[in-house]
Length: 226
Image (cartoon, rainbow, N blue to C red):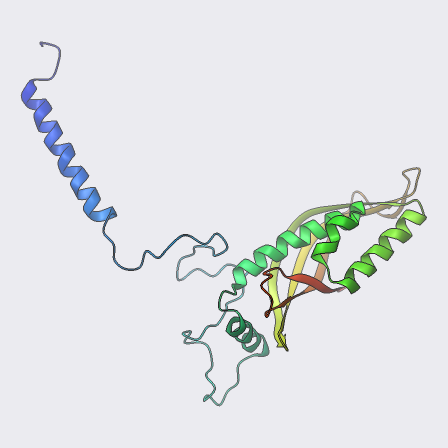
């Protein structure tokens, strides 16, 4: 054993390793009552002092910034509306809604550009679906195709929230960069410029029946600044 470790050194290393394992178990394995249950993928983990740019603050009942009914100064309409929605559904999560709204925004733009009515229908209410469907039909009747590229979404924020009966309504403001081009049957550009990236501001209103077991929100209105 001239080239190996002496037997005593092996025992010493084993004792040190065992001590370190016990220390790690004491630190990492200790429960303090705050570890909670399973991780909710729709609730982003953030530091207490970190506020993302694209998510508004959601006031709650234990929020020191939320105004109580006894205070003289009323809450903003947005804050009051969010609290009403959370009262109707304690599981309501503003961050989760914004994440879902961004996904819906991308899916709806893509389905509209490709004329995929089947993909659009479950995401829109009847009125918005009819409007989209008629626009697609007009485009098809003219033999036109729409090339719409969503370059990126610069910001997403909730700008309005309220309850109307058992229905919750949340309006989300999207600022995105898009390239939109309409071509005729021969591929000639009839509208738009494939080399120009435009900044587009959209306001989409999503609604959900809080009395229903269906957790999905539906697009019920759209408008843009241009």
